[in-house]
Image (cartoon, rainbow, N blue to C red):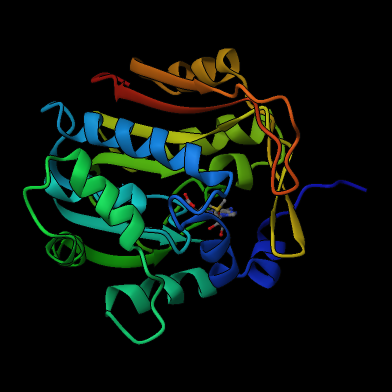
Length: 263
Ligand SMILES: C[S@@+](CC[C@H](N)C(=O)[O-])C[C@H]1O[C@@H](n2cnc3c(N)ncnc32)[C@H](O)[C@@H]1O
C-alpha cells in the first residue's frame, strides 16, 4: 500500500485551523519559523525586484494561508487564490471577510512589514491584501487546467508554496503538475515556487501527510523541462541534524523562473 496522502485524504483529514496554529505563529519556536524567515525574505526580494509584476497573480494550493501573498499584493492588482479542499477555502474566506475566528496573522504580517521598511501598519497591509483578492477557487494540480471548470485569461505570475510536494505522488506527477500550472501563465510571465526539499512527511495534529522528496537537480529539470528559464534559485540548507516530529527536511527553496516566450 502506498503511503501517499492524496487529495481525498486532504479533503477529509487536513484541518486548516490545526495547520495554522501549528506552523504559522512566527517566533513560536515551531519548525516553520525558519521556513517563514527564509521564504518571506525571498518573497519580499522577488516582488520588489521590479521584474515580477503585472495585473494578475494566481496562487495554487493556497491552503488557509496568506503569508505568501503579503508582498505580492504590492505589485499585483488581482490575486486569485485556489485550493483543492473546501475547508481550506472556507478558512481562507473567514480571513478574507475578516470574520470572527479568523486566524491571527499578526506575527507574520509584522515581520513582512518590517522587511518592507515599515512604511505601512500591519492593519493596512492586511487590508491591502484583502482588496487585491478577487477570487477563491477550487483547484487540482493534476488537471490540465488546474482551475477547471473555470477558465481564466493567462496570468502574469503563478505562485505556489508547499503545494506540489504535498500534492504529487511521484516525480512524474510533479513534472505533469508543473506543466499543468504553466498553462495558467502568459509567455514571459513568472513562476514563483517555494517549498521544502528532502522531506517525506509532515504532521497536522495527529495526522501524517506524505511529502515528495525533492532535490535541486530534479527541481531544475522539472522547471526548465516545462519551458522556463530559471532566474533565481535560493536555498536555505538545514544545519541541525535532528529529525523533527512535525516534519523531516534538508532544505527550503524559492525558485523564480520566466516562461519562455515561444513555449
Ligand atoms: C502543506 S499545504 C500548503 C498550504 C499553503 N500553500 C502553505 O504554504 O502553507 C498543501 C496544500 O496542497 C493542497 N493540495 C493537495 N492536493 C492538491 C491537488 N491535487 N491540487 C491542488 N492542491 C492540492 C492541500 O489542500 C493543501 O492546502
